[in-house]
Length: 440
Image 1 (cartoon, helix red, strand yellow):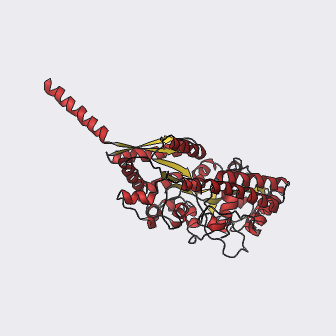
Image 2 (cartoon, rainbow, N blue to C red):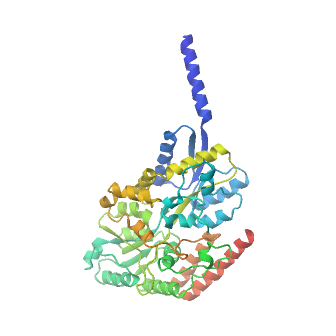
């Protein structure tokens, strides 16, 4: 009996020693539902793979809610070690001097093997400084692609295996679809005024939307998205909407756009590559095709490359050495080809490294899932330029809301496309000046 008690006591002592030795690394994220469940399974696998660290994932609401909460937590000295921040918050995070521990510096300080060149340049370029140093770790990156209804195309007499390449073909195909009664609408867009219709549209045509390399060059950047090409596109959207070719699905992510594609009201939809799983689940009675974003065929240099959306993981200051070692080890784990390939194949997000992409090829994923590599081929079509590397603006969420308001003013006929874009630039630049003054 005595031996049993001694053995039990020793076991508890060992457990207590083991538990005390583990360092917790808190991670605030914004992934709910199936994505959140997948994220937690990755964390559980990491925690089970070693016994020094325990990563604790905590859902903190939407990206905007999480960012606001993080700022408040930092002021109260209650910030997590890791926080997931969407791409439009990059400028705000960079301006938070003293709050951020740059990833490239963290990996060097903790002696983690880290090769920035192994990451897709179109992904990491968005989150690097002007010297090419990675500031945050890409995690869930996506880019807009074209989805089209092959069944409707066939009914309309179009080749179901040939997606439209240009906006001229998008318009012509739409008119043929509508006139043949195969569907009542041609085009639906998510983020019509912002991520798809302005930011990716401009990058895809190698056009700037702001000075100083779209904001990468400093806080003094000024919007210039009211060029002739952007005006032409917004004029076309107005014309196509009035003629039933284009169905405006609402501001921001356009909550009515994807459903109009599911219901076969609209034959073509441009949305996030990460929407692929949802689209496949909702495409009950038709076959889905995939294509690159369209471009105007008479624009020299187009198409260039698309830009990403999604989020990265930022490391925050104010923690001890053990927590940072755990964070660095976890980021290394997240970037491994096996974890990235699994995340990419399970969610539709891009693999962030070339090795993860090649592993997916070796595993036969793209052969079994035609179109699943469209986003990667589009993103890496050409080496990014200063116009297609990404965007970096402070308070960009507020600026995007102005883009939405101005596109709606154009579509309603209250303003011309040029007036709307001029007003978007003027209002957006005022927000940029306010941000610059607050962060000098």
